[in-house]
Length: 145
Image 1 (cartoon, rainbow, N blue to C red):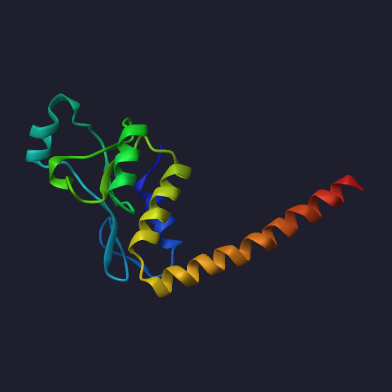
Image 2: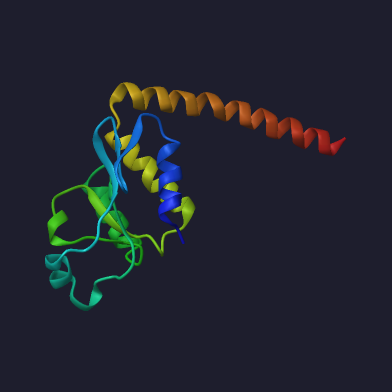
């Protein structure tokens, strides 16, 4: 189960992000993830299937990704007519795990961040992985001795 504190922590770890308003996170001014309470029209459209609890809106890379999430994890992800045709999903915050939330937010960030910012982030992540792998390998050798 994820919380708003988890969302905030994950977003803050990504470059060039800000919380423009309460629970409204952006990267260089572009909306990334946000609190999205259901509106009357949403409740009417969803009927008895309307979830309760905290709802997170999140951009996804494209409509194919959106459809894949909705099909594979319908307990976590859903949509309303308001979002038809848009690459965004609604998320039951109380159901999504922290690791899956981190992946969703990072993917949203990657799809919304300017190219220069995204490129620098991806390069930094790639450079950090070999270092982490070397540390892990040297630690495992130390244990084998």
